[in-house]
Length: 277
Image (tube, rainbow, N blue to C red; front, side, top):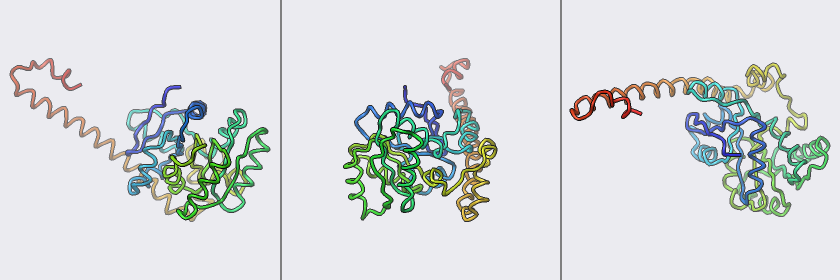
């Protein structure tokens, strides 16, 4: 399928795809001889990237940025564009594992707390018979471990990689190693999704997810996240202000152009609109 449209939200690209379309995109990636990075972007990612140049670069160079966060849908709409639906990373890990089982893509699970990746691999194998598990390793994004981890993954023959270091570490790690992971065709930062797979963490009820209140449920269950949640009202304010600035700039540009053209006797007034396009 053609490359999905990227909608810029505060300078971070978010791709307009559905879950089904994202899976089709991944199938195309698997046929290409290079690593493709997938990021599961939410408003917290966008705000963190404003002050973290390396994270911003990782997101801007990622091949596919999934809209994981209802706030992104609202932001796109505010700018007159459309993201068709949320594609939560915590759901995409299942959909992608199911597709990997059907297509025979060896999956490597990297990161999370000790023992979590191994347990998640067993659960996914049981859920999707035939899923080839290339390997698991807790590890860390510490540069001292980097080369050994890359060798481990390359030796495993994995073509699909889940990295559960949490953002922004996981996304930076993938971007930093995208040219040395020789067998991997798709690498995705999955955050705490392996904890959901193993039952160590529980997602919000469906009604909360459907109403865009998953963040509130997580805050209730994990009150220590309150500092991170401060990014949400800041995100909303930045989106509102950026749209207002765009509108003012557009009005100002048109007015300036008309003022300049009005002084040019060889340009007819009826041509102003054409020149402004």
